[in-house]
Length: 194
Image (cartoon, rainbow, N blue to C red; front, side, top):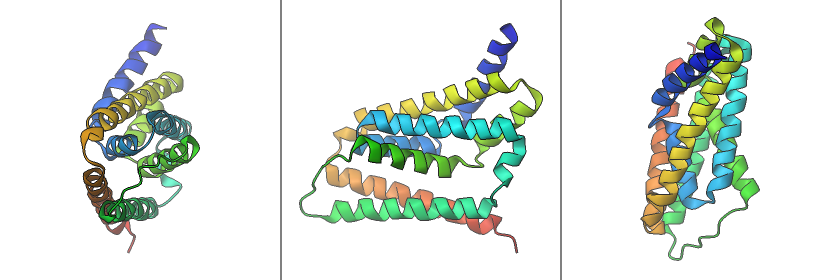
């Protein structure tokens, strides 16, 4: 049990530090500022749990089943769509602040986090740790760390970003998503074989 706790806490610390301020935490903040927090957090946690499971089961090879450029390109397109949609909503005269259903928000959070983190540094770190340490404590520590950083992002989105006027929030989230799309597009171009 002592070895389990040491491995889990070491993994937790490494992954949490690597994930603070990362794009997925920003995605959680933005989604939580516009939608109910529970489905955002649940979608993020389940995506991370599945990604960490893939990482520990398949080790470093888990990130190689799809070419990195293809993953980055899919993330770029997804973030660009969300960014353009948010900017379009910011330009509307009357902003209808209807919150989407919990199921729709859950699916959005899950898909964004899953695609953005597939093959990311924290998944590779979990895969690397699982290749030298016991699989279960690495998975537990990594998943708890990512749940913790997601919860921080959701909290920030609910408390800090909710104080902004809706049109400003749409502009900020639109610019943020477009910046993340540009970064992902750059990763896709850099990783493209040829």
